[in-house]
Image (cartoon, rainbow, N blue to C red; front, side):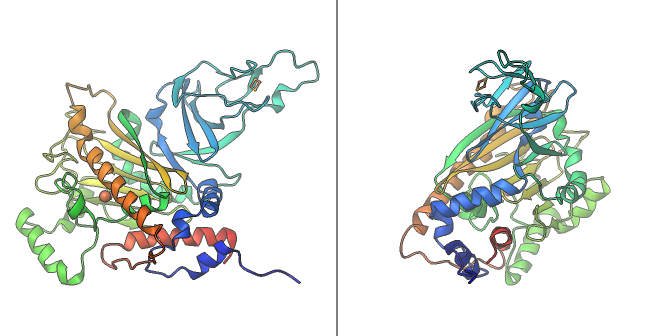
Length: 419
Ligand code: 3BY
Ligand code: FES
Ligand code: FE
């Protein structure tokens, strides 16, 4: 007879209580972690970096997703390609540094040499029957969304990337990611499961009590208020700005900057959300004085008071596009209880450090915020490991996006495993 007994993971997915945090094994169990890597990180579009990570022909960036290492290369025709970072001879890791510049990709073991399009062009002593054409590097799907790079490890990636790109492109393009440079990158290892890192990012319920730097420029509008708090919130806004901040969407759109919320976080396979959010006070940027950190503005902007365009993608990214700089975050799981948070600060490619921007000022708010968030993720990881932990309720007013993250995750896992 057919065995229809659900696996432990199927049972956990089936038993998930909507509106509540996930059960402990989702954050702790190595087998769930392996399933996350196979299903979520192995079959969806994963945000890994930006075109300016590989600005010139021959530039290479290596990204690790679990056990899979991927080399992202700009070829001589300026096309960005991605390959499995594995030599087709005896499997040696090909590129070792996170960033490098090469003429060709040469394996250090026996010097098999690949050109920047992945073709094997040199392999000594292989005999007359050896076919170089059958031993090119294995390609990985890579797409650019207005300069943001996403890879997919599956043979057949989700087809709705184009729909996301069509909707998000007009929001992001005015900030001109392609004309920026990476002013600074910081990697931190958060002591928690990748889903706790993502859940923490999807709400600002914790911001007031934990982020003294971020709450200077960030106005909490957009992260949800209970209806009974709304009047007071509207009154405070009107007092400060002489108008409701919601009406600024209209102003920005009139300037050619799409600003209205689009929320497809749990309605698409490639889930995403965007909205241009106001900044506090006379705010221009995510800095401690709320002024632009970089004098050279992005794109064709002449005015830095554009609010902050935020973009969130499932399963692993969020981004803030300001008038003067961009901060972009990707989460790459390391094991069930540790995650890499990679943050990049981008400024106009012609901006000069020390002249147009002060690096400490540019990175100050988010460097502090990331460290605070990392600690919060750590205390959750400790808490969920206790036998006393049981899933707790999300606020329907400030944690809707956390709920959407969990719904998306559970839905994608169930779509592949059944439940
Ligand atoms: O960066 C974010 O998108 C969210 C909102 C504010 C705090 N948090 C990390
Ligand atoms: Fe790469 Fe031998 S393993 S050349
Ligand atoms: Fe936070």
